[in-house]
Each structure stands twice: as C-alpha cells, then as structure tokens.
Length: 271
Image (cartoon, rainbow, N blue to C red):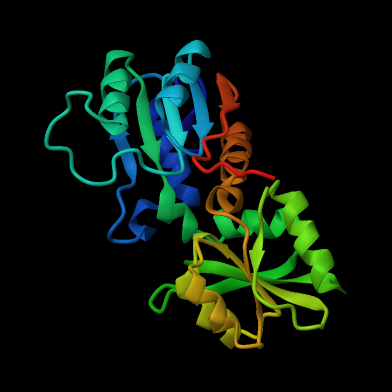
C-alpha cells in the first residue's frame, strides 16, 4: 500500500530516511557534520526501528534484542573519517557489530538542530513555552536556524524557573549565573553546546538563556543582563529521541518504532 510517497508495507530504509528528511533535510546540516545513512543499505526492508540519542555498543545490543535493523540516532557515531576498522575503540566496535548484524545506522544531528520543529522546539514543548521563533535565523534560508526564543504564558520567579528546569530535564546538576531579581517571561534555548549563542540571546532580549557546555568564563558574559543556565548536554537533548519516535510512529505502523531505554549520558554526578 502507498500512502503519500511512502510504502507502508515492506518499507525500506530509503522510505524511512526520505520521511525523516522532510522533518530535517540533510542539506540543512552544518558543513562540519556527518549526517545521513552512516552504515547500511538503503534498499533493505525495515523490520523495526530503534530511536536513540547515541549509538553505542549497548544501543546495538538493544536493537538486536528487539529485532530492529535500523537505528535512528541523533548523534553520529562516525564523526571523523575511519582509516581502519579493527575494533580498537568504541566507534570501530560499533561499526563492526552493526555490519555483522546487518543493522543500518542513520544520524540526524545538526540537520535536526536547524529544523524549526527540531531539538530546541522540543525543549520549548517540554517547558510549555509559546510563540517560538528561531534564536539565530539562517541568513539565507528563513526556514532554518539555531536555537529558539519563546515565552511563558505567565512570568515566573527566577529560582522557580531553575527548579522547573531541573525537574523537567531530570538534571542532577544545573549551573547558572547570578540571578537578577526579576521574573522570567522570555526564554532562549539551544540544545547541546550553545555558548556561541549567548550574545544572540542577550540581543533578543531574553530573560534567561538555557543551553549546555558553558565554560567558566562564559558565565561572565551574562553581564547582569541575562541569566545563563547550563542544564547539561545530554539533558538538553534527551527528548530528541521522543520527538523522532512520535514523528515516525505517525507514518509507519507496519513495524515497531521503539524508544531506546538506555541512558547514554557519559557524565555521572555525586549528590
């Protein structure tokens, strides 16, 4: 059966990736990135999809156990070129295991970062923010951009916002600059490493900017004009897999689209 441009019965890897690229065209990814089908054959029939944030050896084991022959991952497991594949590191071991078990791996990364309905949009949804728009619009294509700026329906206290973030993003540690003694209404967000957008958040008039991987000196850039909050890299991007699972399940019902159960955050905290 054909629905739109996609086969619902006997769907191939190509059918899945074509649909994903409606949400996040690969041409919209950053030049430095490595997105798309990293391993596998476009013509293979899909038996099941495992949606994950990262593709690690444990992710492959989960895909094998759940009879999924396609992993849709946010982060690309192969980022730089491989000159040899002999299992000497985790990237090579993932490549070997995927090939041995006929599992395709597709990565979206900055293509989804730049999508209006992508990573930062999901952050807005989790926090209940409205009226979102790009924080840094692409200068040549207004349909894509980095980050989001949006608003709460009603302003909230600064410390209440910090605790809301901690709760909604299940963060074991939240780092933030000095509070300014005013309520939060306008919020800038960017999933993943976002220190490069601090000035854009200030220029946009945001009360607070939420991202990850801020260095010590980045917090000085708040300059008593904005509250900077580092919620954690994994934490800021964790709902990306939920976004993708929901998106794929709307179109393909002839096999399982499964949300990975593994927490792939490499950072641990002591409390």
